[in-house]
Amino acid sequence: MAHRRFFWDFFGPHAEPTAAHFVRHLDEFLARNALTGCSTGTLSAGPGHHAAYCDAPADVGAAIERALRPRRSEPAPENADPSD
Image (cartoon, rainbow, N blue to C red):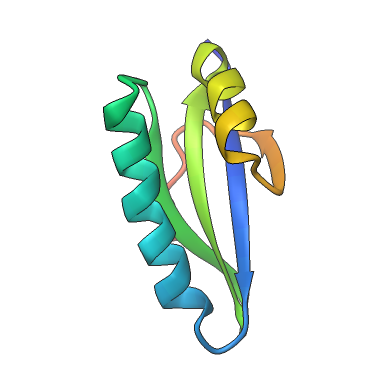
């Protein structure tokens, strides 16, 4: 099943801890709503930017989009290592 990667972007000097904090809430949302097959984490596109992300299967992605309104999404990379 195809996965999508959803992003919530944060900018500025507090972007990294804000993105990490958002991931905690994202994990709670997934557990509370029994949404399975997802993986979450953070990544950075450069200084002053961090993003929280969620890789989700298509059937879960619709619920995430409706409830959490991510800023952007793209096809999730296969066998992606989020630490890259």
